[in-house]
Each structure stands twice: as C-alpha cells, then as structure tokens.
Length: 503
Length: 114
Image 1: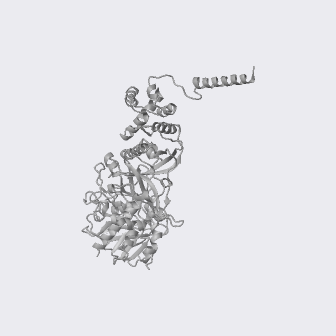
Image 2: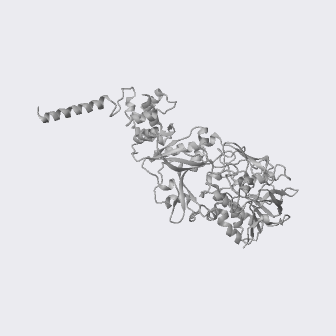
Image 3: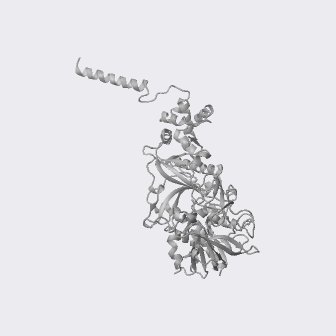
C-alpha cells in the first residue's frame, strides 16, 4: 500500500521523476489517477492541500473581482484532497448533444467533437460519481407518479441523478471516498501539501521540462522547494487555478504557457442560478414530489426532475440551455389569484385546488472572451501572482432564458395543467436574485485551431507536446448540465489517450 | 291578522329586500353600468377578477384596435376556442409577468378600462 506523502517531509533538493505528474487532487485528478492505476505509468498526484480544510492553504486561492457580483475566488472552490467535490451538491446530468454543436446563434460555440466521443465514458464516470444506474431521460419510466403535463412544444421533463448518499454522508467527496483506492494503487503516489509554482518549459518551448514545487508551512509561510521532472503533465487544478498556473509560467513563453494567442483565462463561465425566477401554478393540485426534491428509487438511483428546452426549440428560437427546477410552495397575491381565476375560467378548467410554486434555474451562459481571469500585482504566500476575475453576464443571457420560460408558460396552458408568471423583467431584478453554481468553466477551451483554443481535441496544450489539461476548463461551450460527471467522462477519455501515447 | 299572514308578509319583505340588495347594490354581485363593449365583456365569467388582472396592464393597450380584433375573434368563437387558438399559435401576452393567451389578456385589459 502506498502512503500519502506529505511534501513538507521531503528534503529540500528532492527531484521526483514520475512518468506522469497530475497537478490537482480534485475529481479530475483523482479520476485520472484511478483510470491509470492498473498501468505501468508511474504517477505523482500533486495536491496543494492536505486531507482537510486549512484556511492558510485556502488563502492561496484568494483574488480580486470586478463586474457583476460573483462568489469570492477563495469561497467557490476548495483546496484540499478531493478539491471542490468537498462541497459538491451531487447533481449529475450528461451534457446534451446540442451542447457540443456549433450553434450559429451562439458566438464561439461548439466542441471539436460530438457527444458520441465521450459517450463511452459516461457510465464509468457515473460509477465514480456513485450516481447509481444510468437512467436520466428515461426517468419517466422509472418513477411512479405522473409527470407535469406539458402541451406540445419546446420544453420537457428532464432528470438529474445524484451522487450517492451513504448513510449520513452526502455526495461522493472524492478525496475521502478514494483515498484508500489511491493508497492501494501501486503506481500512484499521492503527495499532499505539494504546490506547483511554475510549469517550466525547455528552451525550445515545445515540452515541459520540470515543475517547480513549494510547500507552505503550518504558519502559512513558504516552506520547502523541490522539483518534479515528469515525462507528461496533466493540469487538473480547476478552471481558475489551471489558468493561473499557465499564466504565471511565463519565463520561456512570455504571455504564459499555451497563451500564445491570448486565450488562457478568457471565456471563463459558470452557471447563473437566479432564485425565484418564475411562479408556477398547477391547476389540479400538488406536483409529484420528484419535481421539488430528490426521490430515491428502489434500485438506489436518486433522482429529481427539471424542465429543459429540447434541441428543436433551441434551434428554432435561438435559445441556449437551461434547467428549470421547482423550489418552494408560494402564495399568490391578488393579481396572481385574478390571473388564475380568469385564465382557468377562460379555458374551462377547475382551478379550485391550484397550487403555486417558486421556480429556480441553472442557465447556460454564452461564451464571452471578455469574461476572463488576469494576473494582478498582488502575490500569495508562495509568491505567485493572484488573479482578478472580470465577471460578466449579458442582457441577452437573461433574454434567452426568459424566452424559454415563456414557452413553458404556453405549454402549461396548452395542456390545461397550469400557468406561469415570469418574475423578472429587468437586468437589475435578475442580478438581485443571482446566485452561482460555482461550476468554473472554459478558461483553457478546447479547439482544433490553436487560434481558437488552448488545448486540442485530445486536451493537449497547443504547442506543448507533453502538457494536457483535464477538467471543465476545456469546455468550449458549457451547456446547462452540472459539469462534474461530464468532466470526469472527458478525463477518462484523456486517460485512454495517455495510455496510448505513454505506452 | 292571522299568524300565517304575518309570516308570509315577513317572508315577502325578506325576498324583496334580498332582491333589492342584489339588484341595486354590489354586496352580492358587482353591477356594471352599460358599456359599448358589453358584447365582449359578457364573455367573461368573472369580470371583477379579469378587471383586477387587466388593471396591471402597464401600457401598449390600444383600446380601439384591440376591441376590433376581439370582436373579430369572439363573434364567431367562444373565449375558450379563442384562447386555445392563441396558445396553439403562440400569441401570448404578459400581464404583470403572467403568460396569457392574447385574447384573455386583452379582454382583461378591456374589463379594467371599461
């Protein structure tokens, strides 16, 4: 059994020479290490934190923000083994096929391959997420209560599945869940408290020569320095930190590694989660429980329904992805009651048992190169420049989702099942209700064209033969699905690629 | 006077009083003055609630043209048929955020203004 090595115990001049260095012990890094655990590839898994939260380590994440209000950079992610899965809500849903397409109404959209390319990896990703049997859009057949009736149109009931709840332990926290598996893997050596401070290229700039490493003392001051000289490097530090490490590593290529086209850190995205976006009235009484909360099926799957636009509606109406969820029961004001009475009477529907609910959502943002991370002059305890995020959300992002909600309202009336109020009209209203998924996306986007992306379709950094990026930072377009399941599937694909190129 | 005559008289007065309250006050049912749009407003089962909803129309309601359109639709169709046709054709209008069939929305606005 391999021990987890605390890098603070390494001698100062240590040089590690694994075949593969994985930077970051979050869901991507751990999934990749486990995917290669039966190979002959020696792997160093380099995690900055320890096994638990440490505020001094966490402070390495602090940064500045400008633009619309957003989660602080040291609050929306976690820097210890398991990474941000340590505060994961457990939501799983595969990206839709349309999410991979180049959509002519969405600038900069499209992946270099279709969903079919990562489809073979979904079930293994599902297993790593401990999300039960693969059901998703066959959820209607798996649950016993009826779905919300929607007339013909653009939206349908879709499904989340959830990372398994084990006893009182909430979703799979990858560090705690897979610590033992990492220890058992003979070719994997996990290092904790191992911070990468630079990705150093060989003078020709075509390959990574070494990783500069540093530890942080318990007092939060710089500790030891050591070096890792791997054959291959996979950067799996999350969409914010991966971009930061590329940007700070500018000794050979001045704008930073992989940044010859000024793309690293651009196209940052997240899923806006505005609250109470709409009021849903169901004429016939309460909705099935799985709309408002999770239900556990007899086969162990934990599911919750959401309302999603179908691809035909997205194309015809030029909207992007969204997942609308039923939240809390609410009371209607006098105007709401008047709307329900008037409409129900007009349609000849009995609404005497009508129930009203607040709706929430997760929205897809359109890619925006100006929503970006840049380095600041301020430095962290290890001497690395901190980041500044310019967070933006356009009026068009809200307008597209509003169009989707209007269609939901129309379909409810068409089926005589209910009706809908859209609660926000102005940008200020949306922003006031805004929350974020903390799904960091897009900063090292994937494209076959080096002028359009930081990594190629194999997740290799353009122009650097032995450097890859794993995680949702490579998503060039985002969809509305929660990223964890999808980034793990993509990482498992990268694992297969590395097996081939490192054989 | 016989006892049954007294009871009959009191009952008659009661009925007359109730009829008066119903006809000449809004305590039991709202009474509306005649308007040029009663042929349209008569399509509403609950004009009071429709007016409450229609009062939230913030602007953009051109009464003359909407009345003409409503008449064109409702002369030959029931309100339910007109609403269904709106829904099928995506002719939706928002009042205070409520997504409504256009005919229901305009009729509600008319109820508020009439």
